[in-house]
Length: 375
Image (tube, helix red, strand yellow):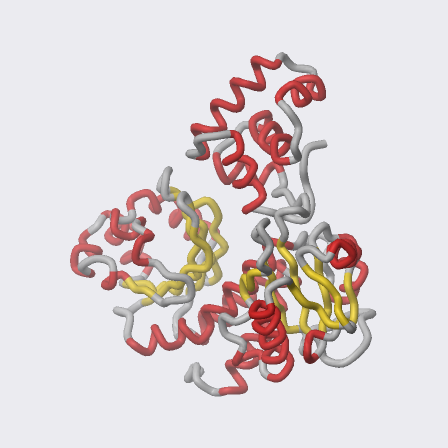
């Protein structure tokens, strides 16, 4: 069994994690490798709904299909402290005994009926996404009580997993294939810039070129990518440099770099040195993903419906609202009465915990994906 601290082993594993950002189909194999590194047999990426207290998504390696279904079935029985996100901080490993008495956990129905029968007595997890109604965890299920070593191993990988998950959420796995990266990037509705040392631009997709021409939220100056804030530009260039020199040292830098724009655009840096860049040419590069509220990047309708238990009609109305359509326009396009659209709106507000129509629009854009929308 690996010690988990060999530099070459760690570097190779982080490279696999970043491969999964561009090829989400490889996540199961990557999770298996992470589980081995974490000296366990099960590693999972799980999205929880704190309102309904259910699992919204569950990608687990090391469990049978039946085991995954049982895990989802018993998740509502997890003790209340495990649903409390107040102690969860991004990239910070956390185990059961940090949120509740582990003896009480062992006496809970979730533990007695699912965890213990499957050989698990604790978990070491890191938060990779957190909103008022949902959170996502990279969770290593342990056959032992978590130790400081478990925390160390989790902390080594945490920011890399979060970066890869964040970028995976911005991409469409049907179109991203590493041997055709350049054409895939040009098809995206988010800005992507391939940059070398010092932020020198090697390639920019169509959306990034449009952003640069508006000088918002990015600009190209003397062939280098920059943003309005000098401090943010320095952060960005520093993250690109670290990504090129040694991706294991990148850590949390380059995740969600603010651009200083009122729209709240942020930048995410992905190392590309070890990845097949297809037709991209030039020195070792990093990819800068620009997640902008101005790019109409909408989550697919089915994913939106699954996330909030919406009907197909409700999800379609929510996406159309996010595209700026009025209630009357939605009714006319769908061939339905405007009162029906208003009823959908009321139900959407209730199901998402939103207070106003504008909150729904912001929610959809926070869940932004490069494809999908209201047909």
